[in-house]
Length: 422
Ligand SMILES: *Cc1c(COP(=O)(O)O)cnc(C)c1O
Image (cartoon, rainbow, N blue to C red):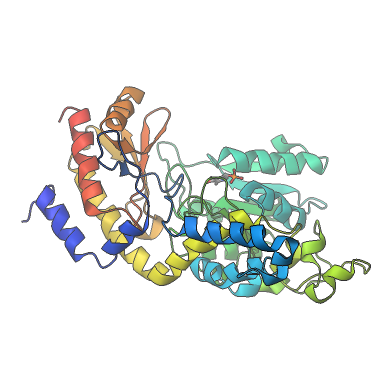
């Protein structure tokens, strides 16, 4: 059998990788010694495409030369600017254009969606989330519950994994919805959990929720640009995500939002509204009553920050070139390679908490190192790895298929192996 744990093997895989040229389309953070870092943190902040700077320069130039006229006469007119991003974004998340928009930021969009899809009434007052949800999501749902005069202690259900387990089981999600669904107004899951890397079955969770009359939404912060989402077919009511993780649109970049087409023309949809959601034909008359644009654009509030939008678009153009299917194919192989190498260190010391079933994960692996503390992480960081540490003992690494190589994965393995003294 070939020894996979060699530099030669990793390099041979890179030579065969049809996506290998894309690494060079991104700026790689460099160590002081002139070598690139092993950057495995695209799940936290994706790298900068080299094309972003020129795209940004274009908008600065149009602003410089045209002033307000840029809304109509810029190379990429600012008035309809968000529309330039819609189709590419829809392809990334598997949606129809009428269902997708880039606007605001993630937590803001989550609140806007809950204004529409968390409508506690009668005995249906609860929100179901996964235990260990991202803190911002938990703060958002708790504050929404309180906003309606209710008590999070009674109205927030956090589904725990079984004793001794970290990931949730489908049958437990189903059973809980079956039992308590009539009291649940909204089911909200991180479609790919930020901590465990578990990728949930959105279609089934939506079906279970809908059968009980609940709305179902997903936070796709760790899914967008990572896993095949098929938001439309999953049939969920809404989804939100950020674009600075796998989608490489820069720190604090604008978020994305999805509302299923079946809600696109609902005249009774409760919603917080602003002028950018108004019918485009009459938006600038400014005298008419609010007339919503069909679909998710009705949720837009403000004219968007073009200088931030630019980076989202620059990145989406690369996603469009590569295609999510090709990315997924490489991700399965690259993460599989990481898994094989890390597991070979021995289960006396390593426990990967991310599901081994590839249908239940994206590119991230969350690696628990027994009896480790943060000094282990500091050691590999000093040796040139950028990854992520979660107390008490988990290293999260995400080899992203867009710009990471098999050699990156191999280098990480070697440094981890040295750090644990194997
Ligand atoms: C990254 C992330 C956030 C961050 O929220 P912002 O509003 O973009 O600051 C929220 N929720 C989840 C699940 C995340 O992964």
